[in-house]
Image 1 (cartoon, rainbow, N blue to C red):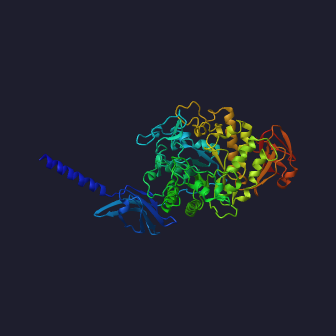
Image 2: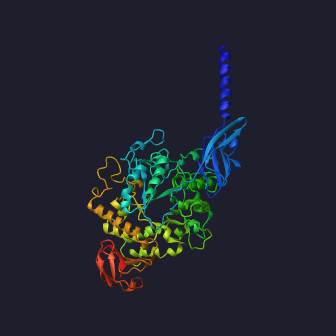
Image 3: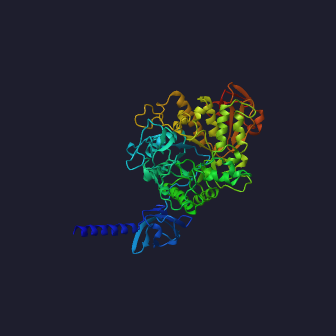
Length: 625
């Protein structure tokens, strides 16, 4: 009797688990929803679940047609190509999959597009403020950590762990940003980084607090507030007349990304026999004498051992990322995109995703990070006037050439090729770009040493650089905290230049968000930025006006921004002594003007034949009659 019972139990177990093993299901579909009324009528759905690749699919919904089903190499994936006709209405339909006698279904929503501000772009009329959300302000301590995530550590005393900043914290300080003159917010990525701690150094583990280690493209990190909070944040910005820039990463994901752990195709990632890191040498892309092996290592080598390199030549992956960019823009009403590690990506893919965004959103701006050291390299990755086999369609880019030149100009003594000549010479190469006004300028960012530390903690030099940034061509961007003189270098780690904004976290002893919380020197810096940012905001000549510069002489450097309504003169004395600047050689731009208003001091200047320039000062003069 006992043997019979054991046999029946065994038989039942075998049948049960065989049935379970054969059960098909749909666990997720990406994109998670779509919209009617987009210009591109095609949509490719990634379907994931046990035996998803073995099912036969049908969709029955007016205005939606299933064109093709593709089985992936991984039997748990299928790709469904749909056409969304103009007649399709918002609503929900079923994706039905059949395997043998089993039928499963998954509901899918087509939404109506929102009508509020969206894809407005950023321009030289804007002032972009770059924030690392984890380090700016903690508005909701309840979302600092979650027990169901791989990293549950939050400790402000350890620089390389999470500190708890979030979207609500930024929202709480939008008045502060607008007081400063900010018109657009760019944050380091807010997509979820649900990953284990990474070995940053032999003695140090690092969390993905910075956001660049994606683990799911369709989830905003709930430690920042999640999808709903991000959507609300965008709405709040737009209600204030501000804009939102999202940070993209096409080159890599975390090794904890769900699509790395479950790869649809063997070539979803760039694979090597042994670990191979990128050379970081972008010269191989435009060098007329370059070797294929060098291009391959640059583009297909991994950024780090724990950041798998995406193979952007896989057509399904390329479509996945392109659709995610459209989805994000539509779902969160984004205005512009900053693209991380731009130079490491497949060139054809970059043009394809840029064009897809520009087709749907003609006003949107895209500016990538290509950390390069010469103007030809920078021009290669944007729309340019260079005769090369590859022609980039990227509208803008981060201006690393002017960044290098600015810091060199402030650190070096004046000479034939040094000091302010560096800034002047960088601008002389603008003829390489189709539109240099679309380059995004900056003094520092989250990957560099802090500006104030680079220039020796010199407030006079600080003001000179800020003045150039906010009066020259391009789209100025700003790194959080520099207006209150936050400083540091990347030694011993990047976290040193990503410290918490004082006053953004419970228990902070000082609150630099307020005038009373800042010391006299900090308020002097803050007010200098504020004055120029608001002046730029209200002065079209500094936004879209022409630029004329003069060869630097004796440590002085002079340029003009002008249009039909206004002429602004920026005159820099980079030396340590006050000097008198004779203006006769600037007659091409100064002819007819007899007076000027010093924008920074409000002083009226009655004669322009010679100007007194204090030591280490850039004066901004609005010329008048």
